[in-house]
Structures are given as structure tokens and as C-alpha cells.
Length: 333
Image (cartoon, rainbow, N blue to C red):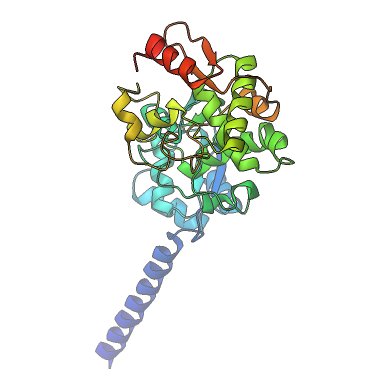
């Protein structure tokens, strides 16, 4: 009888231990299924109990007890570093502990210049250890439409990543990075475009001006030329669109962006020599000046233009013959 009693105690003990382990493992699972990033700060001198409670109150862990127990069992309790973190509620408790051991995010300042493309920005941020290379290119504009309605119906984020000086944390999530850039576009560019008819077309034209013409007043004249060519049904013949095709969507990080005569026959809807009208989307992310130039075009007698690669001066022409002479003189085309 005593042996049976001991056996039952052993079984009950195993069941209790099993339930305890099960609850412990359950409490180590992510606090949320969907990605939800929180700013979290550990102040110098914060103890394990305080950190655990703050994590729970921030919705980052399921159980303070499980957090503390895992930290103790893994030998991590004394390794948590003070500082500012960006933690994801979709991360498990062990993953959060590893993050707190590795230390706070480093703040990195980057300058996204006017005319950079989506691919350029992706490469710039990757070289600065902010995001993995290619992660911006993998994002869909549809993922951000709910918060940024101006993305409705557009196929790419190109054109909407507003150039500015930004500060990011190292190893940021691509979504956080894009939202920061889109918020800047919403604050600085969208108020200019929101009331415009064909605002997307105007953004595309601004992206062309950003790459083609450096001077604001010249941009206004070129904007007038482009609108007139659109009205007449004449191909825009913008060299920067050819570079965009050749470099697969890059300018800054492209070895040979120059345009040769043979490049004018490249088969692409972005080839503004072969296809009248604007290209399917922006070819860069324009700044405020380029956008304003499109909104304030200047009428002139010119129908053609080119940029002198040496002086960067814009050379205007009234006739095709005059333009062809200038192409030979300045571009050797």
C-alpha cells in the first residue's frame, strides 16, 4: 500500500512539474503575434524586478516571473545593459533578453540627398548598418496605404522617401525606417501636391527635374517644356530615365550612369525616347524645389534642352536642328 502511495505521489509530482514547465514555456512566448515595436529604456541602476515589471506594462512580455526566471537560469540577470532600445512585442522573452544583453541601439545619422532613388537609399542605409541590404526594396507600398493614403494605387515607394537628414538606430526594422521617411514626405511634400490635379504625374515630373536640372529657375523653364511636350504628344526624351534603366533604379551607387546613343533604344516603359508621356513612376525622390518648379512652370519658346556635363548649365533650344547641334557639341551624341 505504501508503494502505491509513493507511486501516486511520483505521478502527481511529475504532472505538477510538467504543468509548471508548460506554463513557463508558454510565458516565454511572444506577447503579441503582430509586429509592434516599442521604445523601451533601462535607466542606470534599474534592478531586475523593475525591468521585468516595465516590460510587462509595455506589453513586451507575458510574465515578469518567467522573464526573471529565464534571466537567472541563463546567467543573464547581471548582463542587462542600460540604454534605449526598440523592442518588438512579437519577439519571445529569450529574444528580448538577448537584445538587452547585446546593448542599446546605436544612433546613426544619415543624409538622404535630393534625387536619391529607393535603391540608393537602401544601399546607403545598409552600408550604415541600419537595415539589411535589399530590405527596403522588398517592402510593398500597399503595406503603408492605411496610414499614408497618398500611396493609394501606386506601385512603388519610389518618389515618396523624402530627402532629409535622419537619425536611425542601428539594426532598425525596414518598416520603421520607411514610416519615418513617409512622415517627412507627408509633412513637407504632400501639402504642396495634395490639392493638385494629377498629383502623381507632377511627382513623376519633379523626379525628372531633380535628376536633370540643378538650377531652380531653369527647372521652371524645363517644367514648362515638359508640359508642352506632353500637350503636343512629343516624347519627353529625358536622359535621366535612360540612366535609371541602365543602373536598375540607382544613380549614386551606379558605376556608369552616362547615356550613349545606343542606350536610347533600351526596351523599357521608362524609356522616354521610345514612349511618349511620363514614365510609369518617379525615377528619384525629389526635394521641395523640384516639386515647386513643377507647380510653377515657366512658359518659353523652347521645346528642347540638355545639361552640359561639364558646367552643369542647362542649354535650351527652340528647334530640333538646334538641339541636335547642341547634343553633338555638349554630349558627343
